[in-house]
Image (tube, rainbow, N blue to C red; front, top):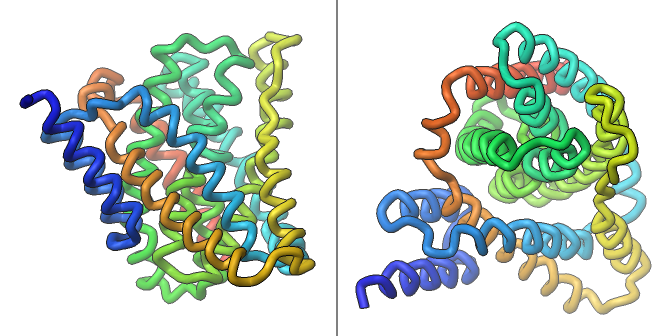
Length: 306
């Protein structure tokens, strides 16, 4: 009977986060605290579900956007996206050598920081033939920083008196994973959410050139490159909404459901963070990740404010 209690609590917390009664940072903390106390009884399943739920939620958010605004937003964030990726990858390569960190681990952390967290790591790992334990370490560190970002970015945005447009762009560039980007923007406002989602997904497409670069860097030509096809569904949802193919009542409901799915996703993200795994990684990979994160956060903020 005792073994069933954590499972029941887990499902109840999932229902609470899905109900819309809690905000994204609280959902993340609920997952993390639950895991500290009870341990996640569905950790492997949660890690698989996170990816699918996030994609479904992001596509659903597309039903609340319009094509013209999306194109303008993507174009406005293009220069900052390019500069931040190139500079972060360059700095990551330098620091990996300076700290004498495993080359593949350093590259995965750099990829996750420069583009889109776990998605970039999952895409780059097979290209450079990284071992599972290295992938786990990189994901653990990135997920930890994602969680911190979700909690600290909204207060910092208010402290720096950022507009919703500025905050949405900053989130998309400076926070690793799409789940935390959208979660932070969700608590800041609808305009911030729209801009953050659009810029982050256009940023995700940079996985393709980074994968090609990684092939040459690690001399692993011929490996398959993962292309984030769900972005096409996101664009399709925007087109459907822009041409009013579906009634506004339906698209509005889809957006509300998608926001709630996102909050559930953040609960699951929190429940998969393992302090034990992070302790076993050593300090150098964490220092690398934090250094890159601070660089991209400060660089992008100064760029946006100027």
